[in-house]
Amino acid sequence: MAPSWFELVAWAALGLGFGSALVIVADIVLLGNRQHMAIMDLAFPLTALYLGPIALWAYFGRGRRMSRKRMHMHAGAMNEGACDSWWQVSLSDSHCGAGCALGDIGGEWIVWASGWMIGSTAALGPEYILDLPLAWTFGILFQYFVIAPSRGQVGRLAPLRDAIKSDTLSVLSFEVGLFGWMAVAEYAIWKSPPPIDSSSHWFLMQIGMMLGFVTSWPVNRWLLRHGIKEPMPTV
Image 1 (cartoon, rainbow, N blue to C red):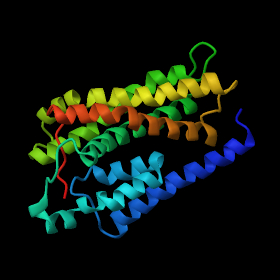
Image 2 (spheres, rainbow, N blue to C red):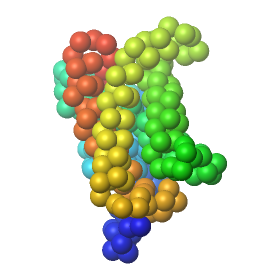
Image 3 (cartoon, rainbow, N blue to C red):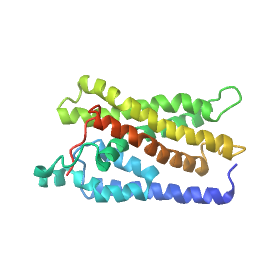
């Protein structure tokens, strides 16, 4: 079990993540800054769950400009900059990471609710098996809803094939960072891993997702540079 001081740190970090996500949701929903790409209405808050104030800074610094009303006002300035600029790569990483985060969160709670065990182990074994396909599925869907609307092909299969081609490596590289950290944290740092329903476990997941963002960033840059992933319209 994690010491009490770690639980307090975990609650503080999780609170920062949830608070940052709620600020972005309020700006999008209550202040009418809905994104030009609708999937980013989900991707930005989900990214804030684990990147916290960093995601908040990026959203208000650049992401808010991608709202429908601001994109309309600056239509002539759309698609500025290189496709592999830090912002384009971070955007690509964010909607991949958001899909992964959604799949990982869902998978963790399914493992917890079902009490799924492999042998006598209820730790990372079932999570590896369930979280990865869920993360891949949501990651591909998030990428699909970037590609399809930009082509006017929502509901067609061609963008889905391209989403699978462009995002599979991105998802896998994100999960390498996440699960590599979780394996170290739960087997090397703790003698007894924190249970899934504890703040410590989710703080460790939060750190793992940050590392996943880092490990998938160069992969997304490579995919954008080689035209395998499509850049998003920005101003």
